[in-house]
Length: 92
Image 1 (cartoon, one colour):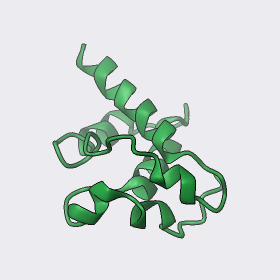
Image 2 (cartoon, helix red, strand yellow):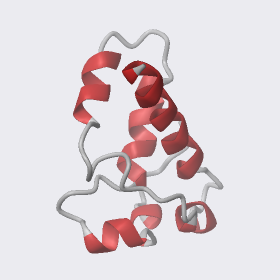
Image 3 (spheres, helix red, strand yellow):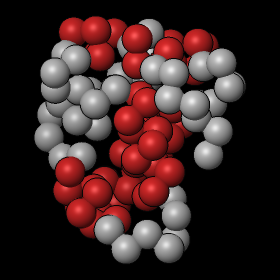
C-alpha cells in the first residue's frame, strides 16, 4: 500500500477535529481497508467488529477533504465507503 502515514488526511477531516478521541480518522480506516481487502486475512470478522459503533466508521460523512490533501493521491473516502458496504452486507 502506498500510504506513508503522514496523517494529512486525518488533520483535514472535520469529524476527526471534533472527535479525535473517538473517531479513528481516515488514515486508520484506510489502513483497515488494506487488511479487509486482503483475501488472505483471517481476522476480517474481528476487524469489522472493532469498527462498530457511532464514532468508528460511520462518523465519516464523505466530505473528501482527505482526498484533496493526500500527497500520494490516495482516496480514503473510497476505502471507507467500501468498509461501510461490508458492514451493511454483513448486517443483512
